[in-house]
Image (tube, rainbow, N blue to C red; front, side, top):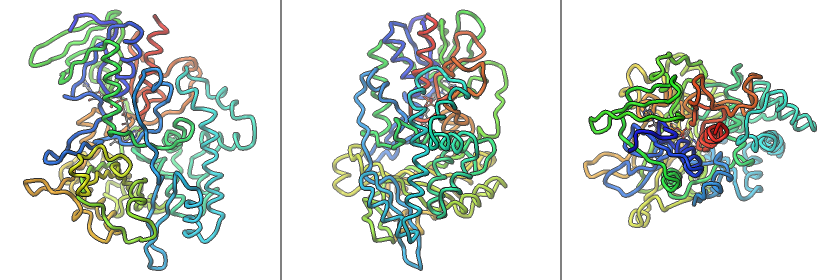
Length: 524
Ligand SMILES: Cc1cc2nc3c(=O)[nH]c(=O)nc-3n(C[C@H](O)[C@H](O)[C@H](O)COP(=O)(O)OP(=O)(O)OC[C@H]3O[C@@H](n4cnc5c(N)ncnc54)[C@H](O)[C@@H]3O)c2cc1C
């Protein structure tokens, strides 16, 4: 390690790696300092269950927002694979188990499935019209994500070209998303399906006046113009590995297991003091890039973090290794078709209004909304060949309406209770309890691990377990003075955010990493 670098990056999540790669390629010396003993932050695959050779995407698991431009610029060898099924939502109709299946490859399958659910064609046509709004929004906004911010008014003018574009702007950027959902759609299950993309990871409801639900929804629908969520082959760890290699190739240096002691943000030459192997070190840098959230930065700046209510994290993540795929009560589609897409349970529109309300009162909801997906059905490389032969699969569950406040007082007890509730939610659709399908470790323990928002904050530093570090942001400048900036600037000269906390950060996108690097290069 040298004592001086052009750039020191605090944290080595995937955005820090993107920034390091661009800056290293431009000839700058770069050092990344990471508190954990691995590189990648929320993009990591890990052998969670020691007796089995299966590498699970421990936190994030699907990719949509990672721009092709970054993949090309950095020469990344990433395969993002399409899932045959977009989503599967089981339901009971006149006492019979059935399911709504939306296909990524066959429009007719989706159409027929919606007709079976609603008894007519209208809801399918309305859903297409609704999603056309987000497609149009994506077309007007996606390319700007890797450019300096445009003022809101100028951004809005881009939509002033035809009726559909104006409607897209109004429905998605001006009024609470709940209005458009209720205007376009009638069926509770279909409405709920649409709403989930507005709730993933944050604590909100359809008519939230802060519009954080709209911002979250946009993040889920504009990625690479299609909003399709794909499976990173090799797991999310493959994304981090490729980026780490690109950064190392560009000359970046890494130190893990770092205990950051203090950071001098105000001086022209920045200095960072940290412990490594019980020895104190200090490095200096011309630029500091901050990959962790503003909440962590606040600890080092001496200025208290002042979160908004919309920054609250709300996620319950369960990672599982299965010895066999669970059999569904609904028989219309094969288990493989149902589990390879996003499997939704207890995510009806009214049901999620109820679970939001209960969680707001500090109660674990009676019915816990969640979505589940089986990575190994689309990409079996994450499971060792001998396990594959025996029918093993990985399964991940992402729970909604599980805010930090529910867990903070007694994390252990609440984690256990929430885990039971989420499994109960799944079990109502299965012939056999999910617990009976789990792999078992040598010591007799089930291969299941749960993470509450408290655990996520502890492991990664994300504020209250918010998976985007804080509330998702608009793709335009909401204040005039921010127009023309990269959305990464801080109050300190030459200190920039290069992670999800930056404007247009959030999700596995590399966008704030790219934008912070552009900012540094623009100054130089
Ligand atoms: C459970 C979960 C599921 C998700 N699912 C998806 C998904 O499927 N698709 C998707 O697109 N997004 C998903 N996300 C969101 C996405 O993973 C994140 O927004 C993104 O990966 C954040 O990347 P980042 O580089 O900005 O920050 P991070 O990954 O948060 O990296 C910050 C780094 O800083 C380190 N750090 C923290 N504090 C310190 C300190 N004091 N000193 C030094 N280092 C420190 C952390 O350990 C971490 O490595 C999910 C997130 C979670 C938590």
